[in-house]
Length: 302
Ligand SMILES: [Zn+2]
Ligand SMILES: [Zn+2]
Image (cartoon, rainbow, N blue to C red; front, side, top):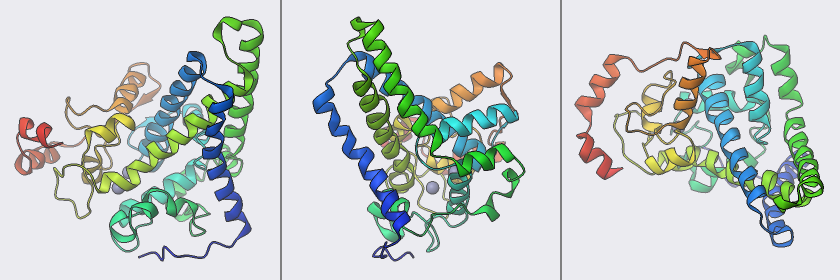
């Protein structure tokens, strides 16, 4: 179990926490820059594009290798994922692999059952404990120099996105005044608001998917399935399914379990961009049938 009272005194951590809380504080900028449908739409789009890069990329690809893709698309997933300001793919995926090894055990880095909701949601991210990637758990990606480079300079994509949004908004304001936006407004909504929601959407998977929802499989952790979290996180709410069979690309195991990342990956597979999408084997479905409630009972309970 982790000592949640840990004394975070290192300078690097002060910087990390300042950036994290600074991004949250900057959301208050909406009071000054106001609202426009243009900036709001960009914020929503960037939330979902980057959520896909986190769930479909950092999680289902880098952490679990649940499908295959080209080196170019692998890098693209890494770059878009990093633009979420959740560190590089090696850091993210290696800590996640560790979570699967020790889910809800004392060694689990973000167990709500061991250390409480705050720690599992955000405390572990802000602590000094996990500054480095666990390279021993992610050796399979160390052979790609471009991924190592991205890991090292993982702050470049979010900074580039923020700067790009500012200029995009300024250009819109100048050349298309009908869009009613400005550089500052686009920066606040497109980067700060969108990134803050993205943080908490992603963190829900670490905190509430081990607390809220139904358990179809009797896994030796507390993972749960929740439709609401699946909708917010593009499919990650089917977390009990995922803990039962982490190798599966799809986390909604049935058609009625909405899994947006799966639909996107399936579409990308038809286009030849990704391939060899792994599915749960028959024995898992047989086990589900044996364990679970009927579909009607299940959806009522979820
Ligand atoms: Zn989990
Ligand atoms: Zn996982």
